[in-house]
Length: 378
Image (cartoon, rainbow, N blue to C red):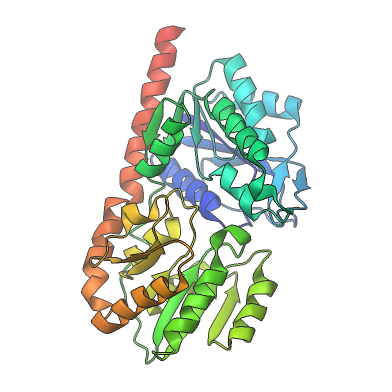
């Protein structure tokens, strides 16, 4: 099967959307499918090598001043149309709701190609974190964003929600044709191989940006480290890195900010961790949560969106309320008291339930069903 992927964000940027695209494209290619990825040109001259049967089509990039390190692709409509006609995809799969996705939907309708959209990000919530005074209070802006979401995703043949909580939220916005399919974690790559160490290690992995609430993580670790000797490692890069480094210095906590690291270093970081922590309230699934669990690491998260569907208190981690630094500190203390080993087996089992293999099985079936339906309608 020939599948066209569309995404405004891609390598060398590293985030949940990019990881999901790369994982899916590589596994689909190994199963005999041909993939063409339409995206924005990278800032440097780097060209990712994803393997055989995966081709790239690049478009000019446009930066977003209010959301650094995220770029939109500027669709060259003729280039896109001719590339689609030459490739003759049986499925169009869109991963970001920007200009590239809008044009892809238009061409998909013209060429009568089934359109799949994955809902990776809750757009209205990003308004809260964009640094414009009082925008979070602007009900008109939030209403407009949900209106765009309904109209954009409503033109899809199917919408993939990475979790049941995301599906319910979208159905609450009167969207239909929603299928729950986890982004999937490569449980073959992310393995439980604990690395011995003396201190208690706390880990956070993700984009260093406003919406991840990493300031809450730092404050929670401050409270936790007042009672327990521990070290915090923050893996990732983003616009808030400087601000959070200053906050960590002001709090006088033992925190290491690694910036971007290699895949090998990331795997080592997971297996060195005693607990993984996230305070994000925006996760439609939380791929880093699943990666940590695949490595047998218990997770401390907050009671928002998809995280409490994955984290089961007392089994593979613990849950606090959003924004509750003391609650997160107490959850880390529970892991400290019981020890990582008590939770590792359940954490690994949870990750295996969301394995990449199982997700690709479901995606292949969805693609096949939509392609078959198209043939019947022609």
